[in-house]
Image 1: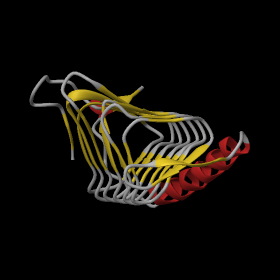
Image 2: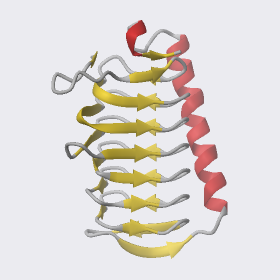
Image 3: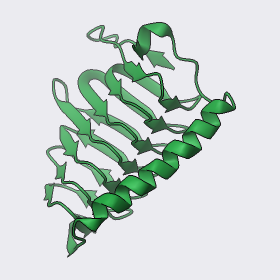
Image 4: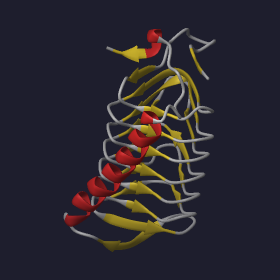
Length: 182
């Protein structure tokens, strides 16, 4: 289901190349960029906020994305938001990063580029570029170096290919023209 916000009337804008699984719910001021892939059970609620999902980003099964009224949740390019994660803004996730399975990115948090938030971790604060954080609350565990950027990009590209196979086999949600970015 893809609908305008009943609060402010803003509509989702979705790039035609994106894969949106059949049961995904997208509401309101949400922008989904090129080759993003939004998998089964995902809920993206921009009814009172702005949410941006960058190109080649994979939002996996049962993820919830929302933000406080009047704020933004910005997810960059080439990211993987793991199964059952929660991203609740206002927050920013850089590029080529991964939010692990069941992890939570909470209000006011910022993940840098090339970061990994371990499965089950809860981020409250800022992650420096190329770092691994784990735990509740998440704390710094190690630095990866810039190679992590390439690893993140490659992982995201694998999900783009998988999503395009699903789309080619008509396993995606039909998106009304009014919601497509032209």
